[in-house]
Image 1: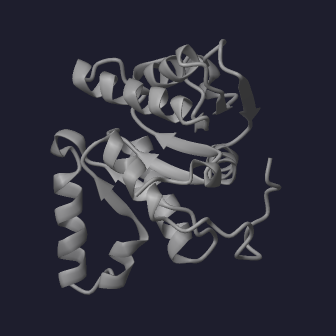
Image 2 (image 1 turned 60 degrees about the vertical axis):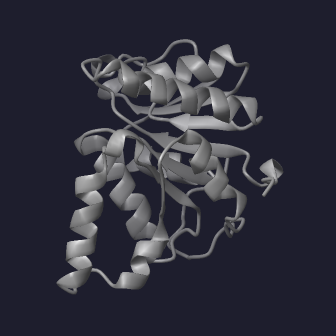
Length: 202
């Protein structure tokens, strides 16, 4: 199915800020950035110049795309904020950062990462469960990175901590190409489905 790419003008990408990860994960991030740019979409991310975050941003820029970063003042040095992206927004708190990234994107790609990536992904999923947003979320499980997490979700369903229907709050893709295929059948998200949504849309 051909995706109507006009529906999604921006993709929020969550991924690692570590430079220590294997090169294959770095290239995965670069592919995400390139493909977002190639489709004429803006990439939204955490504003860093290091790790998978930086590689994705660099690739999107090299492909002629727009990149919007959101970073806290505290992390500007720690994560080495990217000086070359299209737009860099500096906020005071992590809560503001995550909210801004959530508002700015029309869909979310969750790439491999650590605690920060998992925090962002779980919040996006939880907010969708609460109908704070209705945006597509795709967990990109390349190299089986998220296999253990997905098994945990299944066990949580078995133990009745998660309702089975809520496993449909997100999609799982094996690679970046499949992630975009998942968007092909996704519904365009509502603009403001909940009064809990407070931040203005950029």
